[in-house]
Image (cartoon, rainbow, N blue to C red; front, side, top):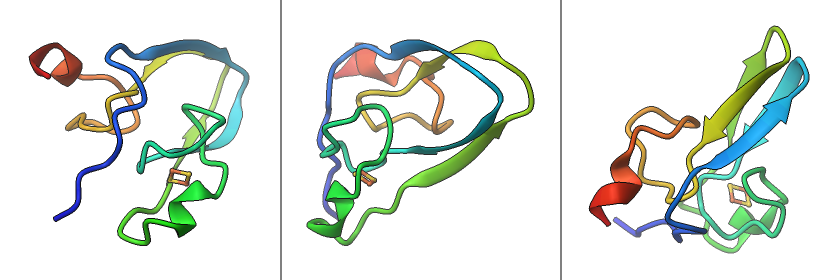
Length: 79
Ligand code: FES
């Protein structure tokens, strides 16, 4: 099984407005932590859609190894 690219070893803390987003699962996007279509090179990965019903600050996984995507679960500390 191919490994996703680790875009950085700490989560992206971002304040988002309510809406639908696509979290990059492959790590190749230049628009981290969101998908920019780069996963088409590594076809094993697809972006993860998620929706926020209200504006809030979130910590989105950047190492791409979280067990709770798209959110950070601290896995980056073990890399
Ligand atoms: S660019 Fe990484 S999942 Fe789309």
